Amino acid sequence: MDEISNITRGLTTEKAADVQSQVQVSVVKKAIDIEAQQAQQLIESVPAPVSPGQPGGIINTKA
Image (cartoon, helix red, strand yellow):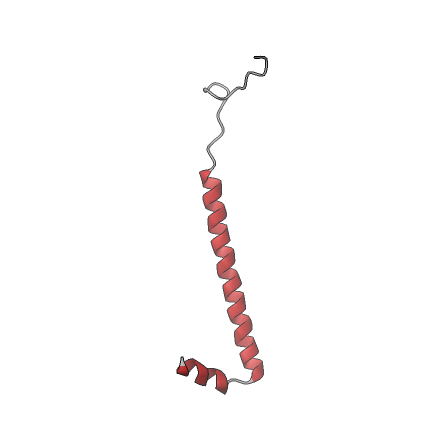
């Protein structure tokens, strides 16, 4: 931790802000990747539609 503190002290305010912005962008990108993975898992969990010739493929609304 001391090494990180020493490095950040040596940076100018502008450079520190640039580093902070890069870290924020990196975190957002990781969050987007995680959300994309979760969305893909959700899509894959949805069962395939049943065709009319298979049981459950047609709902009898006249009964």
